[in-house]
Length: 526
Image 1: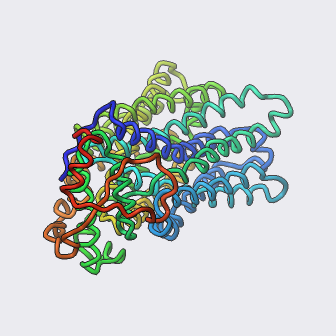
Image 2: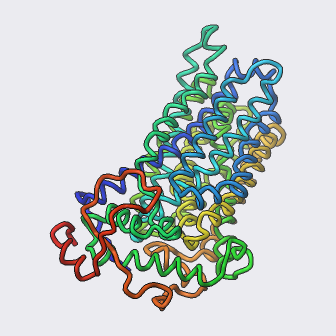
Image 3: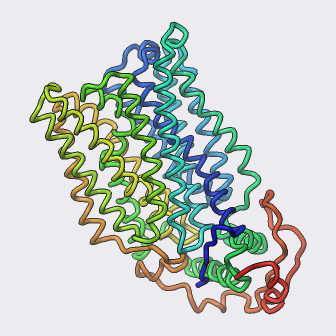
């Protein structure tokens, strides 16, 4: 296995950070659409347009989005990522998401509710494609010892978008004249098209994932891609070794005769599937969906004015960015299990406080108790950002074989969509009927998550993507040289800035590994 040495000054380090952050723009749009809806649901103009929807209708508006993501995870996301490649799948997903947002922003007349509902479903379908293809790409270009860091960048984009959505909602409260009441919520929804256009414009100038390229027979382009993303901290021999590992893994899987159906029939693959799906399910059943969509409403119940509740929501979402940055720095050091279990424990305590204090001091009779509850809402966000928010996606994106990684992650993510639909209905109805006691239900969910994760989830930090077979009881992808050309040739030329790489054409500059090492010695520092 190649030994990567990240240098803050290496070309590859800058390239990896730059492109992974750019891809996080896709998650930024996703997060913005989630965050801004919290303010749209309470906007007077939105309520008037939709005929003052009650809690159950608001729950339906929220929940249908996750019906769209579920449909996408099951039927669309994995075929798009496998056939189009990770980057063009993300492009298609962003286009679909933008169409959905446009429908919502343009809702009008007697069919306004239907337009919002259909727009939410369509946007959810686009989100399903983007939310899987982006972390797939990030995990497949990142060095094993630093994979967690680069995949966490995806969640940084999400929480940055979430915070921006809350801040835009807060700003709309100052646009309180007749015009603002009429179009303020439409403007809020439409703003997501700006980062979407930037994302769509930049995607064609990136390389495809090297593992996807190898799977589709573009080995020479895969070599250039690896060289581009390893230039400055991998030696030429290490780049060749990494490509060999990828080729062995792909060849081994093809020789095995396994297909995506094997996710359900092969013991090793099913062990990964149920763990990843359960992790996504727990990551939403912990209460995160409700905190994203209904935070202003929850804060209003603690005595805050509507404007102050949106302000607090903006601050809370902004602090999530800092928490996720911390997680990015530690996840490859402490591992996935510690961040997940610690985060769930923190969230359980926060839910306990928010459930108990309003019962002890009902009707906002104790301002100190209300303030403590608000503080623990922030602490809950800290636990989520350090745990399920990012680590669940890191874990799911790294444990499946290349050929079925998109399908595996998509099926797993559908578990999160199911939980999101449930929570989006449970929370508003629960708050309306039993009040703060609903927090105890989510406290129990978080407590149950701790032993499940610690006992059932093996640690994956530092392992190569090709090494996961051993961890989950499968056959290691070694001794497969007979499946490959023993004289497998490579080229290694100075790497130009990335351009469109939809095919593997180009000059066939091939040399054996000894010639590569000699020719490239002056171009790459080990």
